[in-house]
Image 1 (cartoon, rainbow, N blue to C red):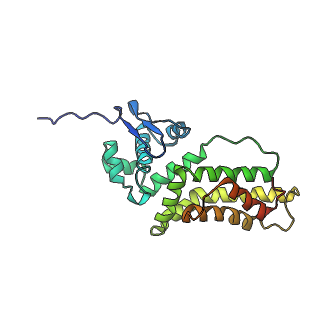
Image 2 (cartoon, rainbow, N blue to C red):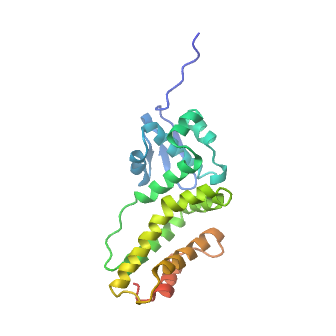
Image 3 (cartoon, rainbow, N blue to C red):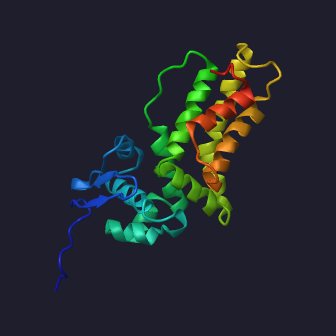
Length: 227
């Protein structure tokens, strides 16, 4: 005799991501977020049901640190088996990094800046603003988790941080060539000095991470002409 029927995953249910205030609705197999990341997520993953898994993981990360997120918890909340979840993402790190990358990669493009110095300052201000929200919590959790899982830390750097670091260095190199900065500026060291100090405050939390702090860093490292 057949067992009781089970509703397919595409049936709707609702969750509230407590800390971020983002509402996540999953009607008819579609992931809808109350912020700009929603549309990006719908195009970032292979099918609608994997969208559900990504949305659930993202909501769970508002309730617990990365180290306490498990594939079992995501699968249970989604109503699927772990093998199905692993078909979409081979590891917890892959799932978290996919969400992490898409949330930033699909952010609205800023207005063009008049100079490379102004563009760099704008990027730093946006990074600080992001670090002061749920994104900062996830980043800090990933760095902490990576201390015992070197593979996660390596993936975080290779898949997310490296390309942004390289782009920032190239931006300063263009600015130096245009005469915006001192001819002797070491662009790689300058980027690491500014961004490294931001991560320092993010991880240790000994002082607030503010836009004013970011501006002071830039003024000290690049000079006050870097408006």
